[in-house]
Image (cartoon, rainbow, N blue to C red):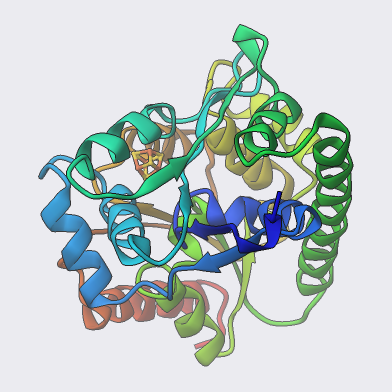
Length: 309
Ligand code: SF4
């Protein structure tokens, strides 16, 4: 089979920010080309918003905009389903519904989608999902297992380097703010990156609650909530438990309307005391000026409290 002619499209949204190394190395090792949609901009958001129902969260609207941007530019668009990684390790239901939702939204478009399912509670772990992806593309199990193994190794190396960078940032002098949010909100250039850019611009070091050693974070999350069942929320809760005494403030950053964040951020506000906290909920109408004004006041309050203003 001529594998090098296959091109898989990767929407630059949602799980992309968590899995880009895993996916990139996996497809590269199979000899499959990948094409990634461009950074989020107003056009992508508007296309996604027009395709989504009004009640959809900002992240989902952005995701649909990225899928639309890839239609016709590749053989397949990767749309995985991720339900859970085990007991009390669930993903938000949007991730569970994603393949069905995308196939329905793009039902009149002649585009093929490549999908797989991670549902550990139903006996389908991540390796099983990747074996399925490889099989759909025509590769044998031995080749796919090798590609998956190399991709996992690369992902771990990259993740450890990012966690190590956080450790180094944590030792810096000056004001440090912990940003608690999903990676696809925090890192998206059209959404949360404006926050990190602003903080850096005023000499504040932004740290990430979701960039800590994952297994450790999951254990520490129980200090704030022994019952939270969302995997990424638990990583963030654990990150807050780990870092809260090393930072000057916390920014809870979420996309409107987010069910898990609405509950979890309320819980954080009630249980994490003695540290300034800003709850920033971004939607498609939030302008950068409004965000910057709120950040400016927040930083001024912290500096005033610490006698640095
Ligand atoms: S966790 Fe929140 S922001 Fe993420 S997909 Fe679910 S509803 Fe949207």
